[in-house]
Length: 195
Image (cartoon, rainbow, N blue to C red; front, side, top):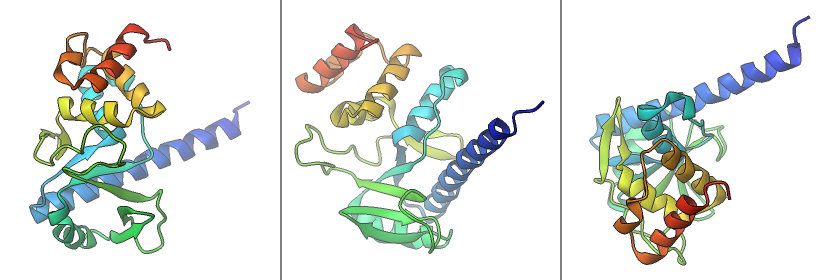
């Protein structure tokens, strides 16, 4: 007898993944068409890099996160409005809601090049120009993405870094690329991959 609850749960998960992917593709296509410099960051950028070396190691994410230059926010808002996104500034965060009735979970979240996401962070957000092409959109370069993950270093950032270490995208030579505090964080993950 089929497990209908399991089938329904799997179907909901597939729809959720597809909605995030659709949001990613629509938003980046709009930015590309508008000539707005951007880079995909966060879980989608990690997914893009990991996918290139081991598709079975890919983790899906609930968010679409991008880096923009603050001076380009108006141009980005105009380009994204054409694709149905609505600009909002909520609790100190700029985002583009996926339609007028959408909430913060159904949005493209923005961080700004050259600014710190939090005052206590060691490093500022990389420039939107530190990017590479991936399929039809741009993602942050691997070195800049690792720097961002080491800077925020939340549990999910650590998991993303471990995925990049496990797949060989990042290795024991990488700590030397970063300032001492970030290098120590990466070295700790290299030395203690199981926590």
